[in-house]
Amino acid sequence: MQDRHAADVGDAARRSPARGGSPSMRAAGLEADPVIEAYKRDVDRTLLRQNLRRSVTERVANLMALQRLALEARRAGRAREPDR
Image (cartoon, rainbow, N blue to C red; front, side, top):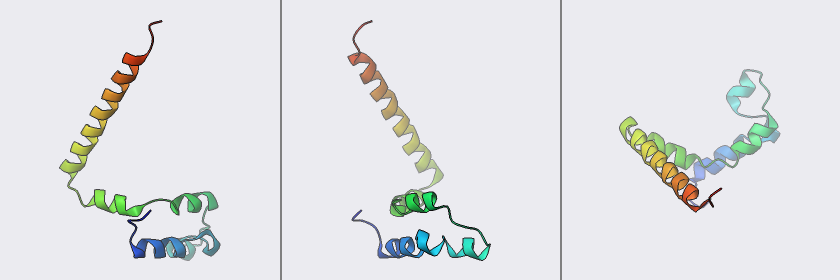
């Protein structure tokens, strides 16, 4: 993903499965799950940070807009279904 910050790429490298997870996990004596580590490598944290900068009201408004979009898509899909 092109818009990742350099720090994010560095974070991913530090948490690679070969190193056994995050430093806090290693300090606690916990082993990293390789499946979870593989998925974390592909998460774009810039979008998470961007969303967390928004107020609760803005996040709820975005969620409501997403729900309206899902409802509209459902309606459109049903309208295209042949009569049974």
